[in-house]
Length: 326
Figure 1 (spheres, helix red, strand yellow):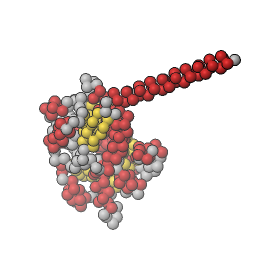
Figure 2 (figure 1 turned 90 degrees about the vertical axis):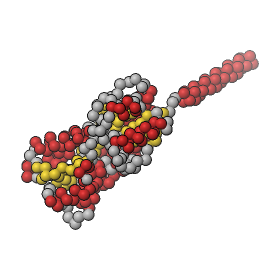
Figure 3 (figure 1 turned 90 degrees about the horizontal axis):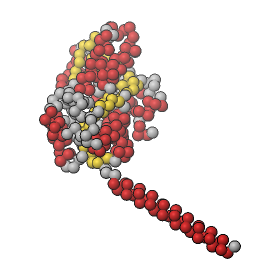
Figure 4 (figure 1 turned 60 degrees about the horizontal axis):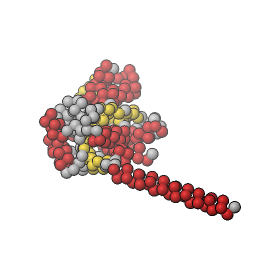
């Protein structure tokens, strides 16, 4: 019996040693694996980077950065004077050690092939808008044409047969961007087929801050349609300064301010791009490009929601509007 007890003790000790050795080996493997996993420094360059409209986009970026081992640097920017200023920032970030950049081009129309060669397709992911030489870079884009259509559909749904007697003014936003051009085309194709009249159409190049109020005074409209977040906020600000509502407002936007005024009934319908997914997928895309530089550039389009006061608090809509609190 004593020999049996001694054998059991030896067996137990051997088993403990095996378990300890296994744990030590597994721990070493985890530490060694994390040590070998490269974390890539990536700079994010968008216009007016502190704008509220990028809140969900930044949240998606940060979540993607954690999953794909990226060290993010969101570059502090204001309004760009032009594409050359943006190129200078891109090159500066790469010169300062960024392995890659995630960029919203402020101007697609003045993009040049020479700049593309200098930057390299394996180092840059485009977001929000493409360049005219499509396929040069991987791009994570909203469904711009379809979003323009969706704004028109919201207007038509509310005005019905009266749409043919309805005058509309458009705040088109940045038409130097491919996305802005596509969004305007989607809206015009749909609304003109319904018979509505467009009295004026202002882009950012029209010095819209001065001409918007002038147009409202000289050519009064029943509806203002705003095709980007900032122009929607501008229209909201104008309405809030008036003693009475002067026009119905429909637009594109994703900032908390625009969602708030949708809830208050100032905005009739808001088309909201899924900015969280755009941010997350852009982080995933740049990580893929950096790990496999010879992989071909791909364009991926991200969906959107049409939000009204009636469906604002639907659970799925809240997840898209406020991903941070999920």
